[in-house]
Length: 308
Length: 272
Image: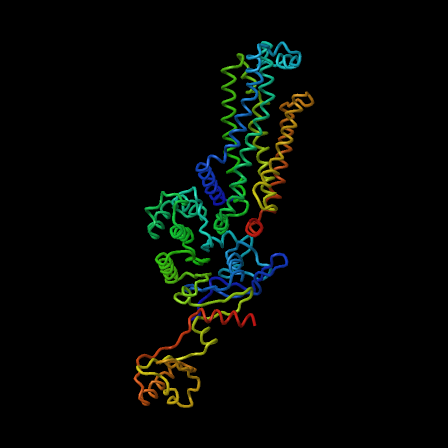
């Protein structure tokens, strides 16, 4: 059954005077997915997020949440369904952690703000920091509090702008686990980031933005589209001489030391024939895997193509 | 305005006041203005005559004051020196109007533009808060402390007069004219200054410009003070009400302009 999109962005274009920041960007977010928005600095990611969150109006195009357009009138109500983690944590330094969260709980009109703040402090493991001023927190803790604030009202659409930027590996892992948990709770998560490793680990779909949408697909589909599917076979002995044993059906073979990288149309159906041919030719096969170029290669290739 | 809207304004207002509590230095210019405003009349009416040994009543410059207060029931029993003191204390009262303006301007400059500079505004704008609610909370957050301060200053002024001025002089501060000056003209002038600052804020990039232009409201107040002393204007209750009505109209117009200019977009994309 096809998933019904929670948020639909249609032909979003945004100009700032004569500068075109975002041009004709369309995509949708569905519940239970992590959608990654990639792009170089100045590509329009933050502008796109701001339009999705109803903070700025598109010059043309629209954003719809459950088919209701984000307008000046509907904006305040629809913003209540969105959790937006901005690039900077944006905590009030002179207020304590608890006070920061309490103001937001009340701004969202939550029925029992103090109780909700207690719950979220517990959930994010920051109860002990409740009475500390935000100014005293480390960057990682500030980010954690900002995330708690973003999710305080249990939004079904979560927009995260660089959520792990500047965090130590442990904190970044915690944030990633949290994002996965949000996905499991069937929320629609949009993640804007430069961290390709993070995207590779958790994103269901990837959009590459450079003012316009350069590509949008699942990470594996993007890889296949750009690099084709490949099977990587590692042998116990030097691989030289085994390429010819694969026969004419496999004419795209790269040999490096003890490994063969073979271009195929489909990994699952072609891999057994490759293994059979190599074993038949006397090769000692150590491992067979679907070769996946890092997402970084995919991303850079896409941007190069776009430039060209 | 819905109940939810009111609660959101309340939420943000409580944050503004809490924030101010954590940064009382922000209010120092207003406190200084208030203190200077209440000290100057004591210097003129009490200290100078005391140290020079010359009574105010000996000066022909204050004849009019003696006549003015003799006609009024509450002050008719004042001796000439007391009547002149009453005149001076009441004329200087207009200076206290500057106090909430100064207070509001120093707080507003931080509360609005400082929020953007601290990068705390964007998450705030991502909530259901409307532009009107945001503006109302910011304006109240700057206005309320100013009014509290001027009330304290007024109480100190009154207390000081009771303690050191001639008996009965304090009654001039309880005239409708005095109370209207402090509790109607003052807040309305502060509100106008604040809204002027808010309007300017959406077109300039730094707090100082907004503060300076908003502080222009002090000019007509100073002109009123001078006009009173030179006898050009008699600040009667009726005149205060007329000026207040003018300020209320100005405030309504400024609020409309402010909401139009002060939209989320300009806050996020123009201010740096």
